[in-house]
Length: 123
Image 1 (cartoon, rainbow, N blue to C red):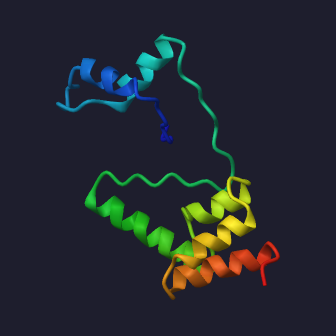
Image 2 (cartoon, rainbow, N blue to C red):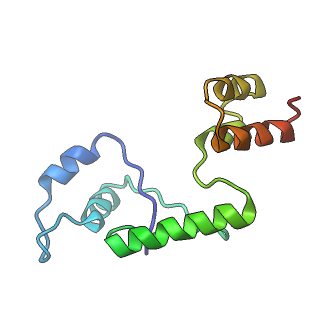
């Protein structure tokens, strides 16, 4: 099953110890198996509204880009907007968010962030 993998720095040593698979590649499954066997694997199921976009080939990368472009255009939302995520999760307050916006040139991305700021009460 596809997933998002987040590792600490020990993953570098784990990867060094891996042997290539029959496809002559290092496999992410082997990394995960190592952490599972050492009681260090934590799994969180992704809920509805999540989409896994494999980008391992030229075609799948193009498909993913087209998917993101379609969702953004139809819903008026940015996918992967770290500034918005920081504001919505409380990692940055509105004043900090506005300070970030002030560093950006006049562009559609800035306009998007300004729209989000207004949702949070900015003038």
